[in-house]
Image 1 (tube, helix red, strand yellow):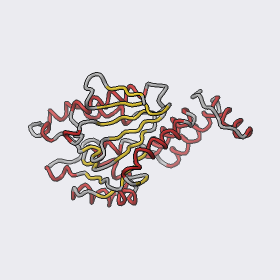
Image 2 (tube, rainbow, N blue to C red):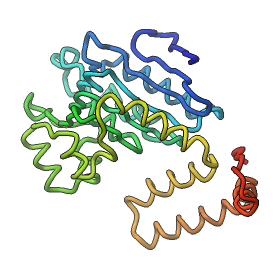
Image 3 (tube, rainbow, N blue to C red):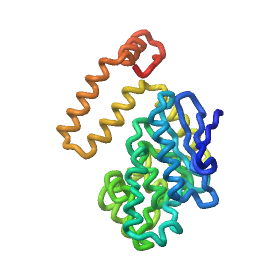
Image 4 (cartoon, rainbow, N blue to C red):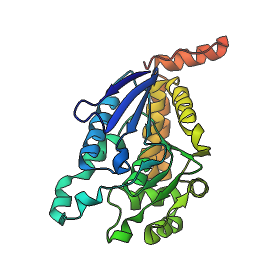
Length: 265
């Protein structure tokens, strides 16, 4: 397994290439339960910027540790901050490379994903959770509220009433409850989460990259559009794919009863 570590802070974010076309991004602040410090957020931003531009990467798996995915914001770093300090951190710019990453991102969640950790998972496209995982937006318990999309992405995933319960009580929900609410894609025994995430990533990496990118773009753009507009985006993207070599290869391989080889062209 090839391993590349971010040069600026090797201990906090580790990037591995476990399979062709797949990048594994691992949060590595176990001493701080993977709390999302400013330096860790900056490293994630740099990492996803680089992976987005890397044509050799077709799918990304994002994970934390076996006991915790990410504990949320670094409270010690927030305690003395004022409103202008928070404004000038421009978290929307820092998190934009994750939000706008054109490659599918699979969150492999074991342990707890609280606060910013839950928001980080919600930036992904698929969430695979261990049976022992839990999710929470506990910001209200320290006098604040989610600030990296927790109120907006959560309500879009689970609906108003489930979102309000989580946001206003700060109480965690189990992985199975999160799955039933629509927040989690798949729940597995903790020991199977990483294997399944990598297996799914390999499957996606074998798909035609242009079709994968168009599907992700249209799904995300269509979520906040009217149905008519979203259907128009879908039609246009589908039409565009008929100009690709991968469309020709995929259909010919189907006729020939062989495995297609997609090149992203």
